[in-house]
Image 1 (cartoon, rainbow, N blue to C red):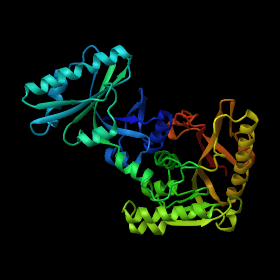
Image 2 (cartoon, rainbow, N blue to C red; image 1 turned 90 degrees about the vertical axis):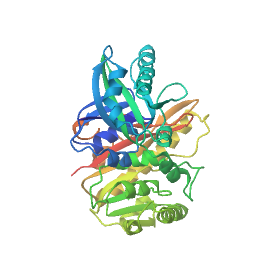
Image 3 (tube, rainbow, N blue to C red; image 1 turned 90 degrees about the horizontal axis):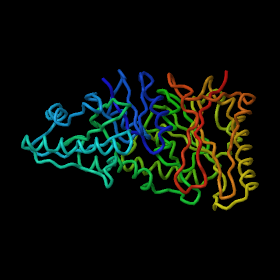
Length: 399
């Protein structure tokens, strides 16, 4: 059976995450903020709880062509899924030009009429512009449990018709982002969804030891504990305050029952300059490193080009020292998922890039996962108006 996944605001990152999380997926098709896959290991609810870059997912229930799409036939196919005497449904079109989107969206009126003819009290749930319905709206309206969220995916002249089975829980993500007691809005915080994507890119194996040597307030540690069965999750930071914040957030996660009581035993936190990690950790003891690192001083947006390059050089030298210090601590073929920032202002831009130094330091860059290797080369996360963009880089410790 085919399935679909609706991608988040950074589709390339979402696709890379899907590739790492579904290594057995075949014939993955990328269609306008969505992907269609076949997977023998598909578990929709488990997958939805695991992924950070996917807003909803579900099953492909029919395939047809644009000219043969008939909403009356579609209702006949789906009416057995209707519950009770009321039907709330969503209708979203992915792909196609504006005219085609309008034409296919209008089929929702035909579907609604067919439902009413069956005696159902029917409501078509829409967004402001008849575009994609937000995960929050799907969640609030119960479209995956009491109603239907219908998705049409255009691939040339072909249409894949899907029904959403699972949707991202917006309240849970918001709570872990804005509900934490310790946040650092001044220096910026790694969004939990991006942290989860990075953890999934690392493909952490059961029983692994994971390290974040720039742990800050513990976002990556939190997402790693929730998404993996790592036996030891180590966080270090040069700042005593950041370690205190990580501990405070960890206590909150346990109190709120977001983490289980026995999860506390999985954490190890300590204050340490990244250049002195070998004083705290044993050689050949780390399976994965997932970390953001220093992004540079906060920018106002009018810095000179030379100032941007100076900031980038500082970060670059820190990363060279970090990779040197990490090398003896890593196990053979250990994976590193890290962020190299790009700084920009009205006067130019400069980015951290250690591509030419990697081999000499004992690492190689990984371009994608599994069958989809070398397909996700520019994994960049940037919010509108920000002067720092995050380039997510995947490295491997060479033997």
